[in-house]
Length: 433
Image (cartoon, rainbow, N blue to C red; front, side, top):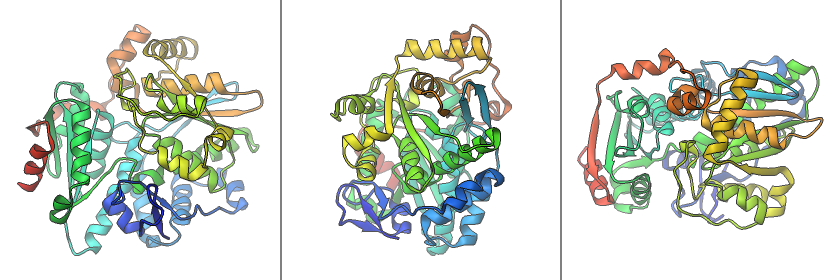
């Protein structure tokens, strides 16, 4: 299958080129030339399939044979060796817990899938090293580091702003070592993102090292985010014994989760509607309300992984759905302040004894606000509450236990390189490796 850039339809790539380079050379994101539609019989049988079986079938169908079936089978089974439970909250509301991977974030799914695909390409390309470069506000760094840790032929460079991450966020990637390099930048998150962006647009650097992104701009990160939409639908069938009118609420940052939901819907999954949940960085929900997409500077919030003033996957949504009216036919959006996020965490805990992370709280509150009579709703819970321990504890007035899966990161030794902000410093460092 051919993949086209969202910036220029004539800029194309194969699946291997799209995965190995992440961004298109014109700065756009890749999308397949068509979204294949699954047979209706597949939807009827979802409830009887395992998570791995569902995910392999979706990946194999979406990729249309571009990746060897046995390779893809192994990639899926190695990726999804942890559960994704669906919690029934009553009154047609459910929470899908996506945070049971090694870094306790939904991003573990995409990172592990992509890492194993890239390992296959490294082996098949004659051993040319692959370099993954990202900037992180905390959550993606841990997932990507743990997904790629120890994989031969792949080096991971994670930029983060000095003094702006919690000790747990930093420990999840800075204590690993081996092929994972933590780069502390004497600057802001915006500086880190700009340095990464310049690296991907530097033709001299691209000649000297194979560089790719492991964020959702990479189609290999986006594809596996469809898996759990299908899995949720099958679990609802099993729970209720009927075909539900499924509505999914997703927390939004770069819009990868939402884009994956749209792609799943276009593959034939009967999602009735999608609900977008923003924090105070409400660029996308404002667009849904007004028809005007106006990027702006990012504002820090309690839901830090959603802090995004210019969502990178917006061009993909435009390509997939067309104009504003078409988006609004299947989407609505809600945005929440820090105060409302705290309130939702507290009320959900005291009313239902269920503990939400700030990111998950935006999705759950959006589901409460957006679900209509007769619909069955699923809120995507994207991160374990202990990853925002101080925020959650202040909301509920009680101690939140840190699971062993997270505590283990504090036992490692920090492997951190500090550089000045500015692309010159980053390029010099990368070429010295």
